[in-house]
Length: 403
Ligand code: PLP
Image 1 (spheres, rainbow, N blue to C red):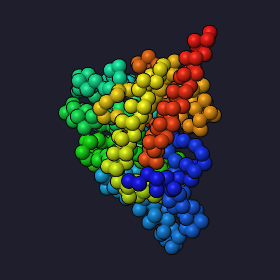
Image 2: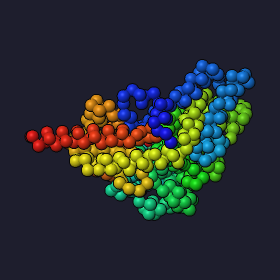
Image 3: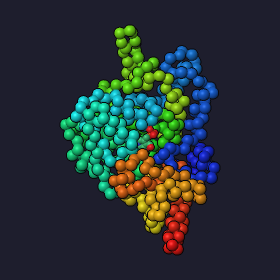
Image 4: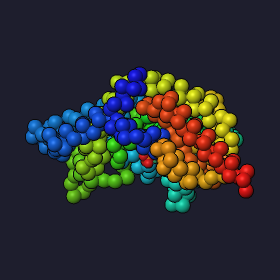
């Protein structure tokens, strides 16, 4: 993978910034923008309905995009519905399964709010109980506790594949096996894993995998929900409307099969086409290479950040983890740290709880500045972050010493 070369595909990288906020949203290569421009300028039409050449082309490109995205996760196109994103995909599962009072959802303390609040709401509305499995001081999941939390009432295990705060990658395969043994379905929040590592839904043993295009070089407002064949019969669409029916009479309706049953109304056609272009771009590079680059950046970042006075990195120093570094610098709040990195060093990071407040609280943190890497980041950029943090830290220690 030639990082120097591929950086030329990302116009924002030539504008004098160091972009370290890909866990929030990634940059988009020209190829993605171009694919969307083509749809809008050359063949705008609705999909699945018209018979005109334009409509046929729009439908072909839309379905071609589904195929590209499906292939990236080892799925077939018929396994994958386009959705507005990870949050929407998870809510579609929460609303689309039938629940009984006393059903249990097992999730973990490291979940993003998008994989927590929908389950909390089920408690309010349907009497579903949410059990949260704990994590250790470094943010690693306690798999034994997870296995113990599963029981005969467990209807669903909802688990993130990779944490958006600590970068920890969970052993989802083992968790899924235990959940299936207990008779539960498995939902994997793949928002952070699918963009950064090879993911094979069959090997994971997931029933549902949710992910977003905008974190993997694609546009905002589009994502996907993979649903296994076994789980499909249990999932009903939460929204109904045009485009999802075989026939309708005054007495009722008959829905199309998945995935069309989950895509009522005019879909985000340009978004799907951009998503397809992003998946094609990533497949062109190869997810093994994407992960290998990330791992080498992680090793470098940990070496560089280690030893900066007053700096705390949430998450583990070793083991399976992605390039996400949530940082606290003694003497400076996360917002101020992020603002200084931006204004003085041109380094873009995000500050706050990153939609994972329970996780921060468990790790004794009141918010962090988060630097996150992707395939276009370089060793120099990682070193620039460490240098900037070192300088700010020295300055802070100096001013503290003066007081
Ligand atoms: N889950 C995880 C782990 C995330 O990092 C994010 C995004 O920050 C989400 C879910 C929600 O994704 P989206 O905002 O694209 O729906």
